[in-house]
Amino acid sequence: MLSYIVRRLLATIPVMAVVALFVFSLLYVAPGDPAAVIAGDQASPEDVARIRQSLGLDRPFLIRFGEWVWQILHGDLGTSIFTNLPVTTMMVQRFEPTLSLMAITLCLSVSIAVPIGVLAAWKVGTWIDRAVMAFAVLGFSVPVFVIGYLLAYVFALELEWLPVQGYTPLSEGVWPWLENLILPAIALGCVYSALIARITRAAMLEVLQQDYIRTARAKGMGQTAILFVHALKNASVPIVTVIGIGIALLIGGAVVTESVFAIPGLGRLTVDAILRRDYPLIQGIVLLFSFVYVLVNLLIDLLYTLLDPRIRY
Amino acid sequence: MSAHSITSAPPGVAVAPEMPDLLPAVKLRGGVLGFLRRHPTIAVGGALVIAMMLMALLAPYLGTVDPTALATARRTRAPSAENWFGTDMLGRDIYSRVVYGTRISLTIGFSVALIASSIGLAIGLVSGFVRWADGIIMRIMDGMMSIPPILLAIALMALTHGSVGNVITAITLAEIPRVSRLVRSVVLSLREQPYVDAAVAAGTRTPMIILRHILPNTLPPMTVQATYICAGAMIVEAILSFIGAGTPPIIPSWGNIMAEGRALWQVKPFIVFFPAVFLSVTVLAVNLLGDGLRDALDPRLAKGL
Image (cartoon, rainbow over all chains, first blue to last red):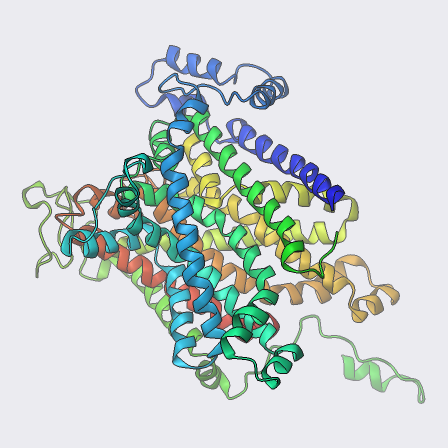
C-alpha cells in the first residue's frame, strides 16, 4: 500500500510537468505576438518591449522554461504585469471565497445528487426516474450563469429571501457567510449534481441486479438498508470517481459564478486577469487549479481501497 | 463481380465472397418514421437542431433588421410589437441579434465537434496502434486533461485577439484529449477481437484493418461524443464571451448579448433572458440528440445511463 502511494505520488510529477510545459509554451505557440496582445492596442513600442522582456520572450525557450520551473519549485509564480504584486500573494488573498463556494457546492451537490440517483435507480421506469433524468439533461444544458441569474432574480430580487450579490468572510459569522453562498452554490452545483445523479443511477442499476441484493431481499432485509448499505456501498467506486472528475466542472463554473454573484474569489481574479491580459496571473491560476484537480483525484484513487476491499495494491 | 468470381471457381473449391468496399447501410426497422418513434429523443432533438439551423440560414428573412444597427434614441426598450425582444444599451434590436447569434453558436459548436473529433481520432488511432508512441501521447493527454477545459480556453484566449477562429481553436484544444482517450480505448479493445486476429493472420495490412475493422466500430461512440462536444462548445463559447474573452463584442453571439445585458440585468432582465433561452434550448436539443444517438448506436454504453 505504501509503495503504491509513493508510486502514485511520483506519477503526478510527469502530469504536472506536462501541465507546466503546456501553459508555458502557449506563450510561444499562440498566434500573433503575445507581447503586443498583452500590451493592448494603445501601447507604445517601448511598452511592448518591456512586456516582452518581463515575460522572458526575448530569451530562448528552454532557458526561460528552466528558470520558470525553478522559480515555481521555490514557490514563486512570478509577478503580475498589471499590479506588480507577486502572483502568489494575489491568489492567497482570493482563496477563501472560492474555497468556501466550492466546499458548499460539493456538500450540497453530493447530498442531493446521490440520494436522487439512488431513488431513480430504485424506481426505475417510473415518473420519479424520468424526473431525475430530465433534471440531469437540463442540468447539462442550461449554462451556469443562466441558472445563476434566474435564481438571483427569483429568490433575491423578487422574493428578497437572500442577498443578490456579494460575499462575507466566515470570520464575520456563519450565517452571513452562508447566506451569500447559497444561491451561487445551487447555480454552480446544477451541472455537477446532474453528472453525479446520472452516474449514481447507472451504477446502482448495475448493482441492484447482483445476486447478493436478491439474497438480502430474500432474507427480509428492509428496502432502505438494501439500497443505502448494500447497494450504495458497492456502487460507490464510479460515484466517487465522477465526484473527483467533476471538480473540473466546479473550477470552470466558479469563474462564471463568481462573476454573476460578485464574489471576490479566484474566479473573479481570473476574469479580471483576462480583461487586463495579465498572463503571469492566469498561468499561476491555471497551475494552481490543475494541481488541486490532480491532487483531489489522487486522493480519490487512494480512497478506492477503503471503499472496495476487492481493490488491492 | 463477386457473383462472377464465385461461379468461375472450379467445382468443389469454396471461394469466399468478396467483401464490399463499404459496409452495407443499416436497414431501419419500420423505416425512418419507425426509427424516430422508437427514439423520441432523436426526433425532438433533431427537429429542434434543424429548426435552429434553418433559423441561422434564413436569418435575414425572419423579420430581422441589421443586428449591428445602432439607434441611440431608443435604448433598453422593453419588448414591444416593433422590437419583439426589446432593444439593448445601444438601441440594437435584440430579436435580430439573437437570430443572427444562432449562426455563431452553431458554427462554433459544429466546427469544434468536427475538428476535435478528427484530430482526436487520428491521435487515438496512432496511440492505439503504435506501441512506443502510446506512452508519450497518453502522458501528454493526461496533462492536458488535468487543466479544467474552461481555464485552458481562457489561458489561450488571453494571448490572442478575440475572433471566432481563435475561440474554436481554444475550445477544440481542450476537447482533443477526451476524444483521443475514447478512440484509443475502442482501438485497444477491438485489437483483442478474434476477427481482427483473423484479419492479421490472413495478412491484411494495418491500414486496411484500420479502415475496415477499426474505423466503422469507432464511429458510433465518436458520433455520440461529437454531439456532446458540440453542446459543450456552445456553452463554453457563451461563457468565454460572457466574461469578455470570447468572440469580439462587435459580433452578435448569444454570449456577447448576455455580456452586454449583464450590467443591467436587475432592471432590464429581458436583455439576458432571450439569448439565455435560445442558448439553453439549443444545447438541450443537441444533448437530447446525443442521448438518443447513444441509445440507438451503442446499446451497451447506454445501459443504465
